[in-house]
Length: 148
Image (cartoon, rainbow, N blue to C red; front, side, top):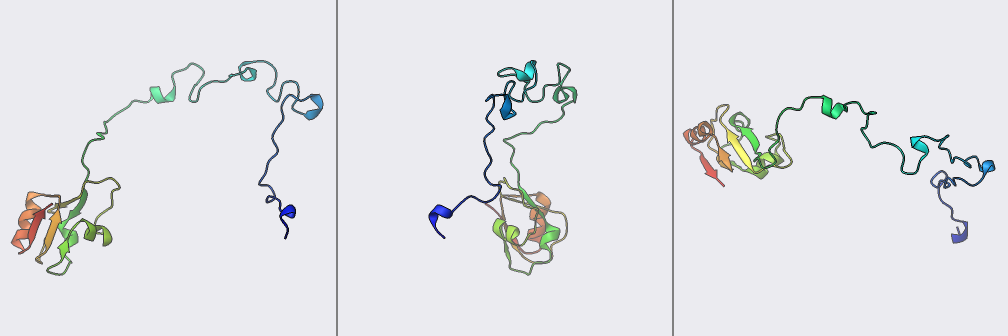
């Protein structure tokens, strides 16, 4: 193999379409734009989403709801998911993510524990937030609920 024999892969390079270079070129005279009209003009055409002057679909369809971009979103886990863990386990955000105990949310502000289910083993749970029922259930089972 020599450097002067190297060539690009077949089909990877495309010839530039040379417009307006005479009738024989195939794209001469009107340069593939047809005859006259808005689309043949320089800067011609309409903006994306333009529907010929009728009310666009983005404005015809009703809008509902509100998305608060400053809201805090937590990774939520219920006590029912923690009930099978052995006694003495330290449950924190990293433990929950590693063991797939909660559905992962990309932008979250930590772990929140909810009180759905029963807890029989004494666990140490470290989270950003607890519901009152979850905190009571953890302490009733002999564990500790630490707020980070």
